[in-house]
Length: 257
Image 1 (spheres, helix red, strand yellow):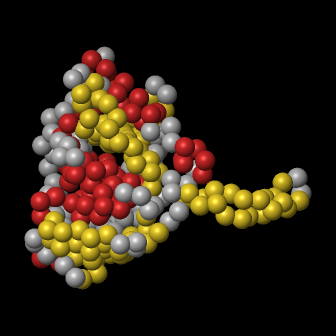
Image 2 (image 1 turned 180 degrees about the vertical axis):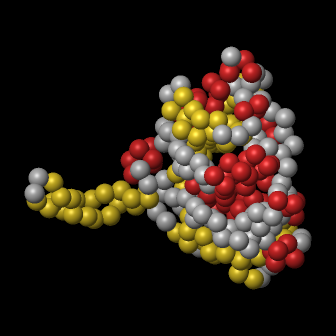
Image 3 (image 1 turned 45 degrees about the vertical axis):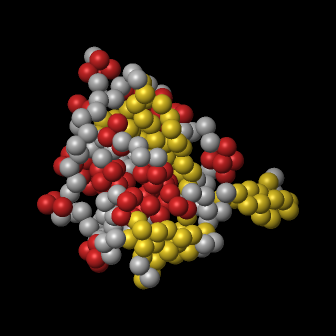
């Protein structure tokens, strides 16, 4: 995840030779049924989860059972899927935020949230705070964090935190992890460190994750998509404050009194 590199540090008017830890970034070329699909720049951990989550959130597969085989090498992933024609129709429009685009901007194709979950604001604020306890994030400041939280009895517990150079990559890895563990996304929520873009909102909606919260901002298109799909979008979660942009009914009434 980290690599130590040489650098010149400027301090007090002079340069000093030193070493500094930076985040690793590697290409991963994904081929589907023998044809190149995309090359993604990712952090090198959880490649399998990334491929599965990415194909799912991009609409290439509708479930993990549609993957016949997945072979990983150092910088390649070769995937055989049951319905390769889905690749032709997927992701034609490029959107903001370093993602690969979206085929869901046509309102008739937008996913509709089926989860009826309500989440306490205390769980949301605790969830955003908890993902910040990342050694890589503290050491380098060079990764985004995404946390997945699942309801256990009467509260939500953290089941996975993912680090990656890209927030979209981290979300894909979380989704892939959930698919491999057969997690019911309708009973979860995610928190993240970066901006909630339209791409992030779509990925959550496709996975039926009812709520996404971040310490950062969101965008107008993400809010529009959240309204239309049933996704609750929350930004600027800091201390005891947060901005709820869409579907406030997903926050339990007792926490808003």
